[in-house]
Amino acid sequence: MVLRNVEKSFGRLRVLNRLELEVGKGEYFVVLGPSGEGKSTSLNIIAGILRPDRGEVYLGGALVDDSGGVYVPPERRNVGYVFQSYALYPHMTAFDNIAFPLKMAKQPREEINRAVLEVAQLLGIREVLNKKPAQLSGGQRQRVAVARALVKKPQVLLMDEPYSNIDPLLRESVRAEIRRIIKDLGIATVMVTHDREEAMALADRLGVLRRGRLLQVGTPQEVLQKPCCPDVAVFMGYNLVPLDNRLLAFRPEEAELGAGDFVGELIDVEFRGRWWAVVARVGGSLVKLYTADRPSTNGKIRFGVRRLLEYAAE
Amino acid sequence: MRLSRYLLVAPGLLGLAAYVAGLLYTLYLSMYYYSLFRAEAPRFVGLGNYLAVLGDPTFQKSVLVTAAFVASAAALEVALGVLFAYWIYMSGRRWAVPLLTVPLLIPVVSYVVFWYFAVDFRRGVFAQAANLLGLSMPNLLGDPGTALWAIVALDVLQLTPFVVLIVLAGMLGIPGEVLWAARIDGARRLPMAFKVVLPMAMTAILAALMLRLIDAFRIFAKVWLLTKGGPGDATTTLEVFLYTRGIYPLDIGTGAAVSVLIAALVSVVAIPYVYLVLRTWRA
Image (tube, rainbow over all chains, first blue to last red; front, side, top):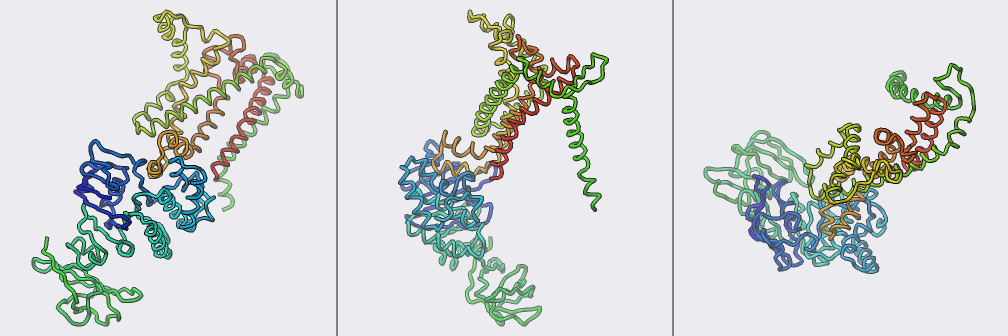
């Protein structure tokens, strides 16, 4: 799955700006970015729902869109798509929802039954196959949507914020389970999310999308340890402190209270379970620091950082 | 507190009470011989009016004529309406929507006059076109075999847009992502229409059908202005019969009896249908 130099504008608004994206076989790739920065647009271009203004799209080595004469429509791209809303067919049972892609491909009835039961078994929804979407819980609906996307053995699985509508208590176990299933099937996946924790937990590699392009692509560890630029650093949770012509960046967990080069004014302290989060004003900017013990100081605090990154100010 | 509750429902209850009272009074009148042409007190005749009406061949014919009109007009309007709505929906031709309201804003009388001239077998536009081709125009409204269908055609012409509007509204309620999911799942053309879009717009389609069925039973103006129920009794619908036998001759008792029979006949069609539709809405 390759996007080359893809551009897309809606009216005057440029959503994607020379987007480059390559996803390998069986790779779980996560596009991370804030809302409204073109994450869904990029999925829609891969699926063929939208056409790029410029650039090329390749699926499995074949050119499927060159933003000109070549355009393979969605029904002939063999992609699976899990929409944020799940987009299930409300008038069909879960079974018929999952079977729909195979029926459209005119597969024999026994083959359809076998494939649907198999994928339903995998996702643990065999008991609810004769229910309609309105009778299912949010988690079951999401599994039906994933099953419908997987049942045709797609070349690429696209997922648009698939876990954002799931009960936070269940989210972690659900996403781990579904990732396991997808990895076992060996299907290349592009998932978009605005949730950094989720992106880091799931991604083989992730890309940070800002202003229509991927600012940095790498493993979660790489991106977290070495953000390429202040934009990515902010998104990975770094504190930014301007100093002269530079931007200093450090992570909240890499700060040590007590002694050091930084002096700030304490604003607030939040209890976060495993640690305390201290919000302080340093110079003109607010920073967040994590500390194991409740800070006793009021007013001024002094702290140092174990690891400091420096960027040239923009 | 208690009083305010009754006050709040009072307007609705009053309307309902007036409605029920009207029904009961009609039921009462239908059992009397009561003509405004005679200086006679109403005379109780029991079911006499009903027996006379039910035994009248013109009434029996008007039941068949009305049934034929309701079935063909409603079926054609809903079929064509769904077809056009689907076309507008899939092609995104939203500019067609305001145009659709035009036929509904034009008074029925204008429509009828236009149609009367159009199908006139001597000088109408169809006749002129036929003459140019060396053909002759049949006298549609004057022939008992075709008069009813000429009226059905006019009704379809005027009220198909009504069905289009309702069905289109239903289709526009379908989330766009579901359509894209269907495309990604490989659905095009016929499966897209019959497996995805139409089932999801089914409540709107059934509602449009219900409204057309109930409304078509009351067909009067178009018939009266075009054929007055003729030739013979070929286009005498139930309401035309009611008018010619009950209202025009001021025969209150007969008119009341016909009204009650019409209400009973409509109920036979409407009540099971409404029941079925409500059941699909609940699911």
